[in-house]
Image 1: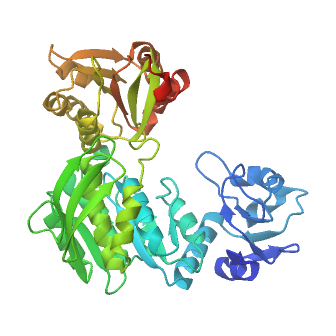
Image 2: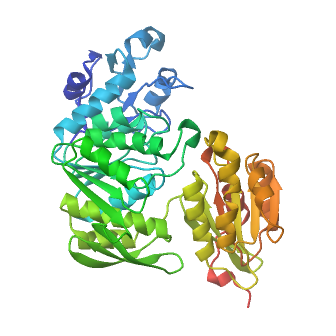
Length: 477
C-alpha cells in the first residue's frame, strides 16, 4: 500500500515521541473526529471553541489508527491504547508536517488570494489542470492558519499540481501561510472592500493581499488583475518582493492574458481570450462575467504551469458553480418552476454586484420576477451604512424591481430604495425564509446573497426543503 505518510516520516517531520505500536503508515489526515476515515491519523487541535483532545475517543471509534496529541494533554486521555505521536503543540506539528510535504514534492504550486473569487478560481484551477496530471487542492475554503497546513500535509508526494487558497481578514495573516506554500505562481483575483471594518482603505487591503508575493519561489510568477484600480500598487509590491515574472489579466488592452469577449448564455457562457499567443474560445459551465474574468487568469496560470491548455478548456466547460457560490436550482411550483441561485456563502460590495448581475441575466418565465434576496455584509465597520445603501445603484441599473431584505444593516438599503422598487424587509434570516417560501411564484428567479454569518443559507435550505426539483414531466398540459 502507498501511504500518505509513513509513521517514521511523521515522527521525523513533527519531532514527535511515539507511544504504542505505531502502524507502518497512515492513509490520510483529519482534524474532525466525525469525518475521519479508516487508517487515518487524527490531529487533536485545540481551537477557539473546541479542543480536539476531547474527541480523541470518537476519532478512534470512527477508524483512526493513529493520534497526534500534545504532551500536556496526555494524562487526560486516560485509558486510550491507540498508538500516538506526542508533540508539544499539535497545530505547530501540523505546520511542520505541511512544510515537510512542500519540501518533498516536485509539484507545480499555485496560490490564490483576492477579495472575491478565491474559492471559485481554486476550483477552476482544479478542473482545468486535472486532465494534465494529478491535482491536489484545498477542500471547501481551507485557507486559514489551520486549513493551509492541513491541505499541505494531505498532499501526496506524487502530486503534479498543488492549488492552495490563501485568505485573510487582517494584515500579517497571509505572510506565514505563503511561507509554507511557497508557490511557483501567485494569483490575486481582485481587490475589493471586503473586511473593510479591519482596514483603513483599499490600499491597506491590497497591501495585506500583497503579502502573497513574499513566498513566491525564485523565478516564480505573479498574475494580477489589470482591470482593478489597485493593479499598479500590486505590481510595485510584486517587484519589491523580488517576483521574477509579473503577468496581468483582464479586458484592458495591455493585459497579457486578455478577455476579448464575453457572451452569457443562460446557465453558462462563452468567452474569447488571448492566452500565450493563441485566441481561444472557451465554453464555461458556470455563468457570470466575474467567473469568466477569473477563468482568463486560470488559463494564464495553466499556460505558465506548462499544462495542456486545450484539455484545460474542456475542464472549464464541465464546471458547475458550487453550493453557496452560484449553484442554480430549478424548483417546481404550481405546475411550473422557479430558479434559485444560491450565493449565500459570503458577501462584500463587489460580490454583491456580481450576484446582482447574475440575477439580471437569469431566465424568467412569463409573469416571473427577478428577486434579489439580500442580507447583511459583515465586517464593514463604520462603512456599513454607506456600502449597504450603495447597493441601490446596481439594483436599479439591473432593472431589479423586487427586493427582499433581511438583517439590521440591510435597513440602510431598504431606506435607499426608491418607491418604484417593491421591497420586503425582515429583521432576521429566519423571518425572511418564512416569507420567501410563501411568496415565491412559478416563473421567478431569485438570488440569495449575504455574508455567511447571517444565516441566509437557511433561506436556501427552506426553499429546497419546500419545493422539489422540477422535471419537464411535471409541467401542466
